[in-house]
Amino acid sequence: MQFLKTLVIIMLAVVFIVFAYNNWQAVTVDLWGGLQLVTKLPVLLFLTFLAGFVPLWAYHRTTSWRLKRRIATLESNQTRTATSVAAPAPMQSAAPAAERPLEPESVLRSV
Image 1: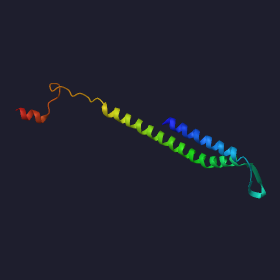
Image 2: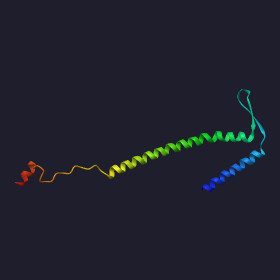
Image 3: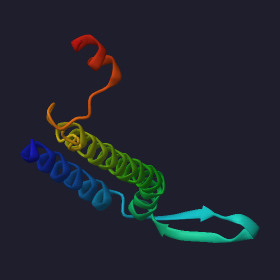
Image 4: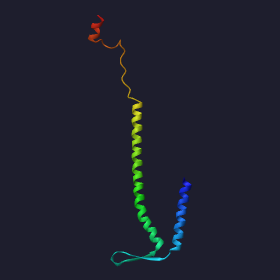
């Protein structure tokens, strides 16, 4: 799978380089207030691509980071709960019958 990812990235880079070579011409972009930006067409297209890609990539990374933190918290809570259920708190042992004081009901039954 990593091979296919690398292959696609290399193919896109080659396509972009061929496009940039064939379209290396000056483009004038009219900005606000009468400002004009003169730049090469491939540079303009690359900046446009980054303007759309970077915000969505940042949103994806922050969502992924938040979900990984949430999963880690849930897993730690689950292991903590599992260990507390698996090892219950030791109960006090009951005293043997000979050492316990007799209760009035048991005395009446034995008579």
